[in-house]
Length: 212
View 1 (tube, rainbow, N blue to C red):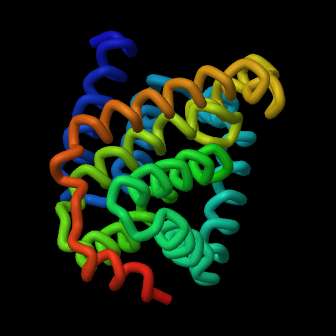
View 2 (view 1 turned 180 degrees about the vertical axis):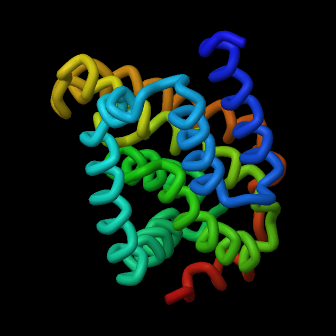
């Protein structure tokens, strides 16, 4: 079996293990890489040269910042503040949460941003007694759209920037405007699609306005 076919087989098996989640994906990735080196698919020197340390370093630093920020409660504060500024109305909250998610995803890892905003979303929708589905779908899309705008918004962006030597402002200059337009259109379309689910009683709206 050629090294090419062997690498495809190792990748496929590792991917299956990641999908079933029986073993932690970090362990799966390390075992797969070790097998590749042991079977001579790549040499140890080639494997080390293939590591993008710029991407890994930036992600580690970002995770440290996110970990500290999460403990501070700043995401919860911003979400509740935005809900109050929206008057406690579901449609306004959906738009506000989407904008917060998009902006945060442009400056932090987008997956982490969603994980931080989702608990607040559930809390607010429970007070409003509305389905969280429209909010979650909009936030997920806003996260991916916002993460595209900057160098650090998404790991693929970091890898592209590292390979092409593009800087932070190169991404912003070329992507900020189209991303903003796409975000506004996406939120508007989803707001129209889910408009029937975005109504709450005056009592429930008041409960949101009283949140601290």
